Length: 368
Image (cartoon, rainbow, N blue to C red; front, side, top):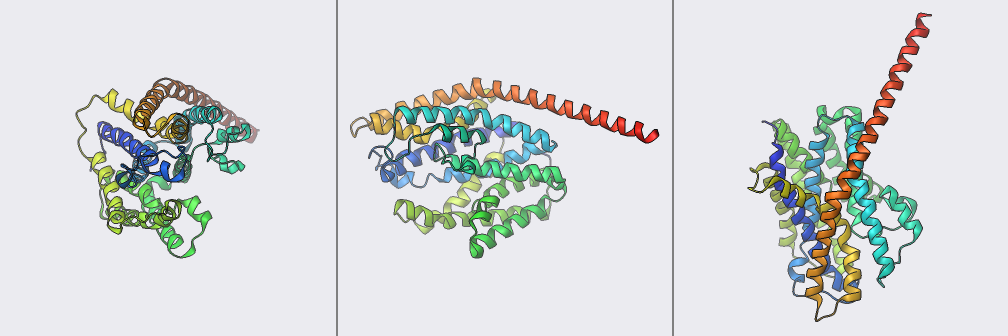
């Protein structure tokens, strides 16, 4: 089977934005009223539907598995790491800084006010490594993304990314099943993303299967899908504990196949008839929108929202978030990314020159 064309990613760009808006709706339309983070405001009329929109996270993870595998194809471990850092870090720092400023100016009673140490710890993205909580609750998914990138980096560096990916994925899924069903280790859960591994693995396997169709690849893809479908049942106890609400078994059984099906359709179907620059621009603003929306939104609702104006505040808030996200994605992110890539190439060239000179000097010393 031939590799998927780049144009098909336009569908995933649109799906990424839809997924981000789903998560936003989950937070504003369902979580905010229960948690009290919006000053007691909420949208109870949306809650029966919005409570299912955390499915957007599952779609995100599946898209990530697909797109990151594609971006890693044919690249060295160094180039892959440099590309991921350049893509993630600048936008994350800008958004974390904006969040820290907003929460300082408009503190939310249920959220601890930011500290300088907490802000500085976000320089490594996973601030919990330095003992500081995330500035925004949505950042936990970025931590999982970083872990996934780390494993892809190791797969490339060790040469198993191309020749042994099926074995690696099946081992990952097997460890996930054992850990979630019997061991229950929190360390293994975080290190191997065992709760959500099915979605990352599905995206990875889908791309690899498109590149080279085989029965073994299809079996790996099916195994990933099966584990992904189980995921909502694994995470539901946390949902019940946090929100005091039981969701239907039928709904839980449906969201996994729905997330996988929509992602697979968008990855394999012909591209929508949409302007590529527009689709790419919409997809690009997804990352900053996701990083900015949760706690900043809570702060805005807590300080400016009332039962009478909550819909107007929501519409204005979303419009501003989209505008700011578009600005970050269109100006700050590409310029910072290009600067980091140029710098990484200089480091690479300097290292290669040093390595070449060292090899030459070694040869000369041997001749003597």
